[in-house]
Image (cartoon, rainbow, N blue to C red):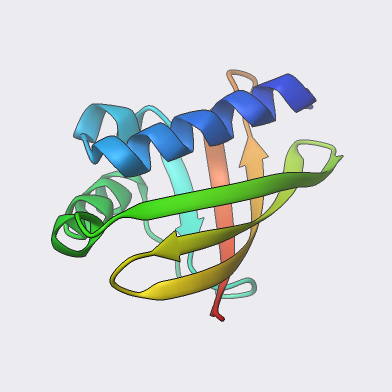
Length: 118
């Protein structure tokens, strides 16, 4: 079960990866066999290498600026619920709710994201 500190460190690393857009920072967040789901109940998922490719392809609009604030809602077993608001210069403001499952090394193994434009 992750600690609050591990979750906070992971989200700080998530922000760092989002800002840097480097392969190393992005890949370091996720276990090798990680699952990334864009919607809460979808069965289709993408693995770590596809996550890295997808994140790096957003560089053009990311350059416009990005800001994010977040709150840890709960930790239930190995899964943390996190909510936040992202502000993207080119895309507007988004409300986010994540559920993130961690392994024993505090690497993400399952990431689900609810994302609604405000």
